Image (cartoon, rainbow, N blue to C red):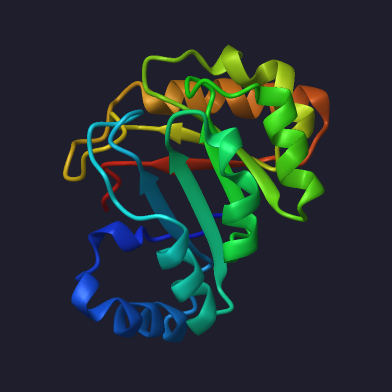
Length: 179
């Protein structure tokens, strides 16, 4: 089943509340919140206060994508701010299994994310602890990039492994997606 999780990063931040209400009216499945720290990726976006503000005006699932260095340091704060799903990158200098366990212990769903050049096999050892895997189809940190054509192969590899294990794990794709 296809779900839509629009990124609020593309919204006019002077009208963020209005944009959230429009997405609620459209019955979007989730809201994708790109958190960038200027270290893991070169840009900076927003943090816990914005997540908390969004949580206060919507019941839509908040899919928080942490593009930050050592995300394990902030998992509890993002959960308290209202995240429903917390995702982080395999490449982000966090102990992967411990971070996934911490996210689950706080009542949130887990999402393990891989950059375009990271092979799908990188997440295979952790799939039993993942509610979702996010495949980046652009380099993280910059909007407006074109979809990388090798992403579908990576998605197929993930799907095959998930099916082989007989688990339930969503696959999310982020970047350059259009009609």
